[in-house]
Amino acid sequence: MIKDSQENLNEVNETYPQHMLIAFKIGITMLVTWVFCLIHGLIPGFLKKLAAIKLLKCMRWFQEINIC
Image (cartoon, rainbow, N blue to C red; front, side, top):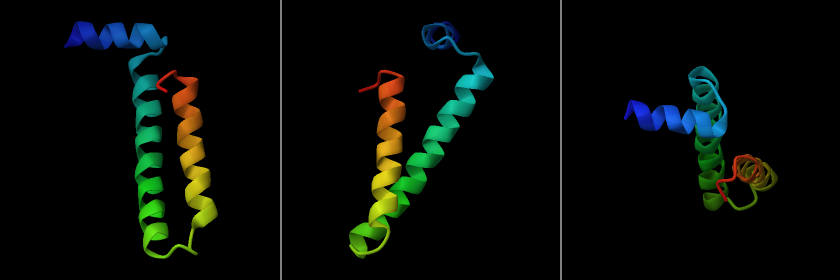
């Protein structure tokens, strides 16, 4: 597990604290985005632009780190 973790950190050229902060930032943003999308799904006229903006932000992050 430790070897795999170190390999991952080396692949993305980050220290453990850097990787943790980025992962937390993305995770929290995804949770907030999920809430916005859930609310938008229940009330289509509400949060429509904000939900889309947050989704695009997540997509840009994933493209930057070559996930998708």
